[in-house]
Image 1 (spheres, rainbow, N blue to C red):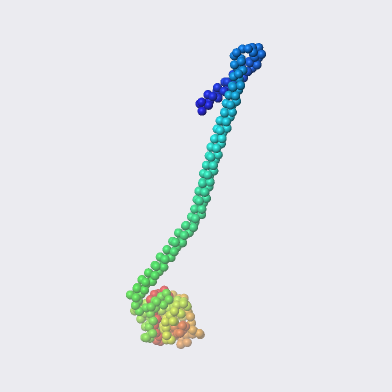
Image 2: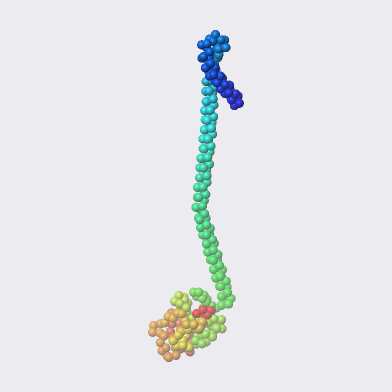
Length: 264
């Protein structure tokens, strides 16, 4: 590059000298046509002119080459930038897709947690049933589960309503009341066609039938047709007769149904 600069400078100087001397020669040749120096200059002028033109062409060629290299370099840089931009856009798109999947991941996690919780609750319920069954067998060996509660049914020995209540208390329970239609159907399915005492009565208040176990108004009553009628004027205890209730004298004998709790 330094060498080219020197050549370029020589060419400039030669061209400048040529221009200056050409004007002088134009004037002097007519005056001193026989001067040897002028003759030599006249011979050298075409060579200098050629050198100057050639150097000028080389300079422009070098400039073109430099510009071409710069343009190529700039083009390569632009291509690299465009590639980086495209890679960046692809990365952003990938992140956006990943972000879209985050709710699905949390939803799957939530569903898994719900499934695990449901299984735990199911296992706990089974365990409680097992514990309850063991407990009932230990503490209520003569009682059986009917619906959601434990009952004892004695279809062998009959007794009056007061003795029936006493027998149930000796077993740790109460003479049975019935809380709803579902329980009535379940208990009736365990009975024969005999009549059984219930713990429902209106002995203290003839207008209200209460449960002997809870001492509260009984929540469910299903009377047989035309009952209660207090036909003997002393029918203050309730019996269960073929799935229906009937008021009856407490002093008469009926079979026994006990319950283990005092919920009703």
